[in-house]
Length: 155
Image 1 (cartoon, one colour):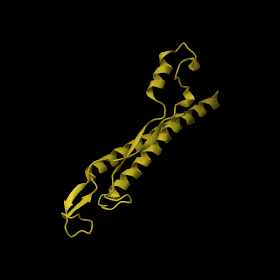
Image 2 (cartoon, one colour):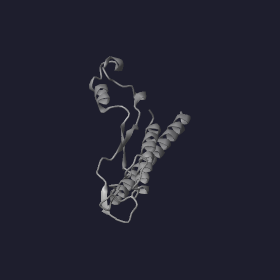
Image 3 (spheres, one colour):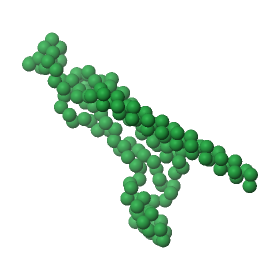
Image 4 (cartoon, helix red, strand yellow):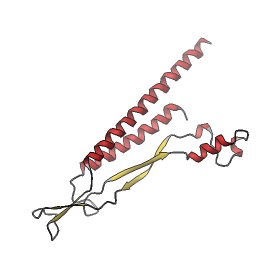
């Protein structure tokens, strides 16, 4: 896969991560979710499309044909990153005493999502930086492709 295509997979994953973070922030005070009880924070699980062991098998036996190495990958099969799934946080809800709240239990406690605002904002900044890094890498690849075409025309 080309460098620009690999960066594009990174952009897709980081954009999805930003969507999940904003969903968590928007629901920080949601005491009633569709399944009952407070909203549960979500976390994006992502990783490489091809496992690292496939890269090791490919480079570990340089004399054998790629098809002969078990689990070997071709250069065109390198796929960047992907979303494996979205996990729901299992942390217990944050209990706040609010006897007048309609969602309060018999003891006057209301269950709020256990979402740390500072943690979500830090993750948002980190994700934004990763997104920006993928844009820079994509632009660098585009410039290299353009330079290669320019050099090819001179020949």
